[in-house]
Length: 319
Length: 161
Image (cartoon, rainbow over all chains, first blue to last red; front, side, top):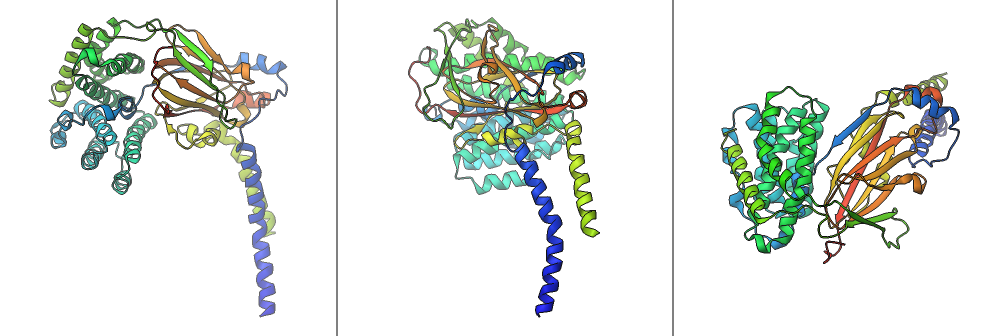
């Protein structure tokens, strides 16, 4: 037994050595990459000249928030849930062509975010199933799979979790399309999501005179529309569906282009944060009341009409 | 003999790893790179987080929308050979430079509180001070830009400062 143990020990010791070496090397690698590097200057003299000689690329990315992030700005405690604003999930199989399917997927993603933000369990799960099914139809099914739906089912009681799942679904779809060179699909999905999010926002405002906060949120979407249109317009795609999607949103873009943009001035100051573990913090504010975009009553009415018209055209398959 | 062969295989594997700098997929670098060490409890990941491939000569500009009444943490990360990272925050509307991390020795994480909604241009480049000349010529690395956010603790009454 002792001999056997000795032999076993030797065998084990021998087999441990490469493992120990591997672990040591992995630890060394982890130590190298596990911490952010200091900006210590080693030597820069020739390096700048070398960098100058290399071919330079200037990449520009126009980014915009997900529907959940757009809607989460609205304090849901101040507004009531209105299920009639959602596009019924029973209509999901009525959309036949690729553009309609992609755009309506965006609409349902915004509906999903809306239901999740209000903690509507049944509607959220129903919409997630619809999103999964439409994703399969346009061959982006890897982005929203059964595990995501199961996760939603398991966490249906947690408001934050539903919000995160709705947001993850949108980000997964964008990421999947990006990875598979399907940016034209991103344009159509985002257009649907953006339109539906604006549809919710305009319908939350009953009275222009008492809707300061919501109106400001709506006016601020000028930035979102601008970034989205710059992204879509910069794709260099000759896909007619992308061109027609841009054209569909032009009426809304024109209204936003016409509103008072604000001076854009800011104040910037260091925050008084006593927690030294937190990174340095700055606070950015508007310089004055004229620094932000704003909507007049007429502009609001025109925007509301244009958003409702476009949204109804999307959900009725008229585009 | 077996042990020596094992070590040789491991050594070869480790020699191959730096090659990933050239061929890696950068898609999730903001979640998988050094940026992940900045993940904070209580904050959510912002969908405008982004990753891209870049070389020391390249410049990346990201137009990002920050909603008001929220705290954000911006984190930048890249391959160890490409540090330090240089970034500036520019008001998209006025083109005024609001912040340049050069003034803070190229810090890689910055907290930002937005009282009002703003669209910023974030201009980023990598300086590759730790690379050899050959590495600078050959390597394209990933840049990760992680944005986390949370709502202000209490809604501030005065939206305009």
